Structures are given as structure tokens and as C-alpha cells.
Length: 100
Image (cartoon, rainbow, N blue to C red; front, top):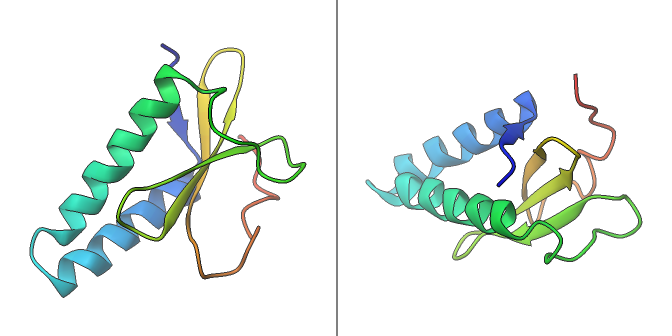
């Protein structure tokens, strides 16, 4: 399995979403974190299975139970998570992100 690297902004998106849900109900943010962790594991095991996002070259996987989509790119040496994007906010805002 290839290692996973998060774009710094994707990590911030996840942390903010976890904090938001945790503030709404104790344990809910941790549940989101678990669902994202599960989704990332699925991506690692089978990165080519999940559908492409438009013609961007990125692929996407929806997190279970929560309105978040994980956008990623399989590179030769790793899986790069570009965004943990809320499904109802600013479509494709992340598409200009580049790996540093």
C-alpha cells in the first residue's frame, strides 16, 4: 500500500469539521474522523476503484454518514489527499491546490 499525504489545507478542513461536529454532540466529531480514516484506508487499498471527478485527474470518495467528499490523486509514490470538502459548499474550490 502506498502512504497517504494530506495537503495542509485538507488537514485543516478535516480538523475544522471534526471540531464543528464535536461541538454539536460529544463523540460526533470523532465519528467523522473515523469515517474519514476508513475512507482513506479504502482509497489506499484500491485507489483506482473510486470514480474520477469530472476531468480534473482527481478521484473522489464520499465519507459515510457525513456530507464530505475526499478528493485525491494517486501518484507514483503516494496517495495525495487534496481536499476534505463539504458537499454543499463552494464546488471545486480545491482544484487549484498543488503539492508542495
